[in-house]
Image (cartoon, rainbow, N blue to C red):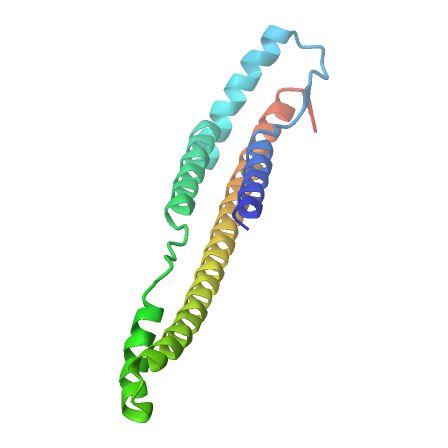
Length: 177
């Protein structure tokens, strides 16, 4: 289950990183030189950032930091279900008392009690492990949803920035896709 969550997280990170850096394609429709195109792109990047309040470099840095934080949280939220012991000892003690009272044979009662106590402890351990696994799955699902929401928010911001950039470049005589 942990491996599946790691793979899902990696896929979300890859999609997020790819979509954040998928800039529009710009073609010099009026025969602008490569140097002129670079100058115009730099100016349009600055203009788009000023007009939208979105800086793609800062946005990418924020995305990387958020992803690192979430990965760190995932690592610290691993279930810590430890197997408890002592069921057989407690069962033997209770069985000895009951065996002594009922049958005047504490040894036989202790043996039955130890077996019953071990079985009961095993059941409690299995239940605790299942509960920990369910809790971990719920946490991983919640983190995946949070990552997806962040990716959608960042993509919306980048779409806004690229629309402004594209409008600026079209104003400079370029074809933008």
